[in-house]
Image 1 (cartoon, chains in turn brown, red):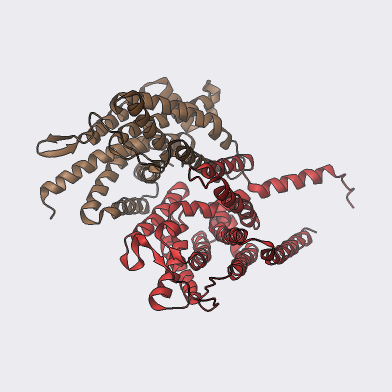
Image 2 (spheres, rainbow over the protein chains, first blue to last red):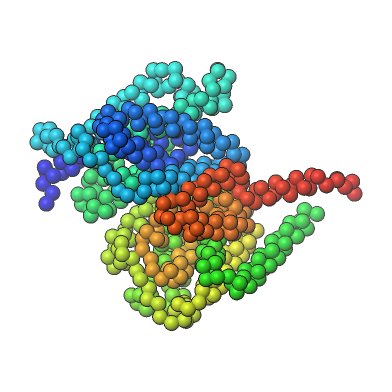
Length: 293
Length: 334
């Protein structure tokens, strides 16, 4: 039976999960806003971050909360390298640029999954003893899982930092300017390639942060990114392409809708609610909630 | 002069297609059962990618949800055959019609969306279909449907002893999708589709009914994709949502067209002829360890081809022929 307690309880966990979804999606939104590319390897970035966190936990006994900044920094470097090594060349395509970008990032995703399978085997892994794993926190009678609560707080902090970064720093202005007109920024002395590389780094670092937290309470395996990637695409599109903060709000909506769907439909159908809400929103507003493109 | 050159190119395409069909039809005698399997998959993907190409290539509506139509074809055939004993040929036709109807019903709201919003809507809709079939007990849910194999028969389209009939059907299927594209390419619809793809606003101002063009492309594309799904179900005689409706499949269908040359007559066949054997061979020769080396090779190949030849392999061919033509001495104009 759906008592009010159960409803509040599941909506509260939905909200926490939604904040995490926002954090997973914002990197995708950032990269898309900057250069019109949907990164189909975004889920594999998440997978890489989860494995990195797992490695640091097992190899160096670092708790995910400690290693999260390290993982984010590693993903930053990785994202920038992916741009410089692969995406930069995909941007040069003269024909079919949309399809080239889809399939270059899709190919990258397959390679990353293959590498994970080869070096780390397809086994499911989890981090054995973490500070937060399996613990719950009670707030006015609502029990919240500690890892998800930490994830939600990290997500809010990351969005706040991102807001400051975009609106108050020179790098943020360069990012916005490049987003507006990548050709013209060269005239005011902004190196387009550098901004793109940093944008990819930042996007990857954000999903890296999310991955470090997710590693606490989720199984880690080579295909783990796929299901989250789809939710991330839907979140970004729901918020509207080109809107970084649309992703924040859309993440919350997605988390709440998922929790609400799980209350009325079998658990395996919980994503249907998310997809239905996406369709309903874009049929009414073809550019998502806050989209500019 | 232009018109003759155009007619000559059309005749040449038809001749090449006829020659390729004859060569392929003679091929199976010299192939092992394993190679025949690869040939069947190659022909099937050539046809599927050609079907995808009608909507994604010619009309420019990038669908990443064609797994839905493939799955509808596979499930219609399998369900009608196993539950109601309807012969697969009727199941195939039913699957095609159902898929086309679904494509029209979905196109009505979806074709108002553009770019990535459209692509993601197609993914999401296919994913809803996948989840529904995964939970639909009548259709076997996650365990899927097993089509029991009986005797060699064209009526039930079952051939436990020989691969040849499957090869000929797949070849015929590839020929039909090619021929349909060949005919449509030069029809009113073909021109409308390319106009919609290049600049829909300009096309609309010139009297092209953009919405109807997209709907027509979607219906044709979905119909043949579902026929491919029916064939696949009968060929492997076992289907479940993962094997016929997963997202991966939507990308695999688009890939040959993209790598061969998107929106071109020969791109899908050429792409499939290269991609499918490579993917199957890497899988059986270096993927046997189950450790993903085949994935690494396949993914790297996709990245390299997409980066090196953004117009697909056909783009490379036409660039080479242009180079050769330039190298020839110019004739004085008459």
